[in-house]
Length: 270
Image (cartoon, rainbow, N blue to C red; front, side, top):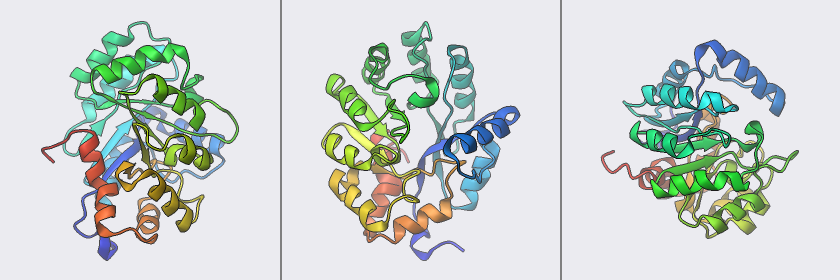
């Protein structure tokens, strides 16, 4: 049964992965091996739609990441074919892809809202010079960048590198996943505060207590936070309960669950 405070609430999940059925099982296993956690979700778009519907999630943003340049166009075409009826999508770019500007134009024309990158899995640094053309192209088209942020073992996307990106690309709209940096939350609080950066709530609440999570939200400002499940890794029931239990007002919850995403992505007709 849904929590009474969730009844009638609009929910936009901005961090939900989906993969083609033929590789979804393999990708889920890779996630389990890399993060050393059990992944509860199946990982296909069909399973995500059903899961979201069963938990009252009306809108979600889905994506996949190109780990090779040859994957870019197919992923973008596949994600674009899924959008509609509450489903929104992000494209992908690989820095070694030859026609970045043209593909960013196609991403825009396909109706995708921006791109998702995962520096660790793509083998890049988020602030690498070869990414400047990508970020300039996104800002020029008013597209959003969602990046995986933070890793306790490597330094591809930790807060100092994201801060470096924003110092060079002040017009870029960037979502730093996982409260700005998985296991790097103090760095995110110090270095990303006040910048043109938003934060999603995915894959964080299981690792911090309510008081610290609320401290981080207050430090950056509730207007900068977006709800994210990290499907197939996250569980809606757990994420809802944690956000409801940390002392946020109903107005603040509305902002995190829906209003901030609507404003960031300029979805005025929702």
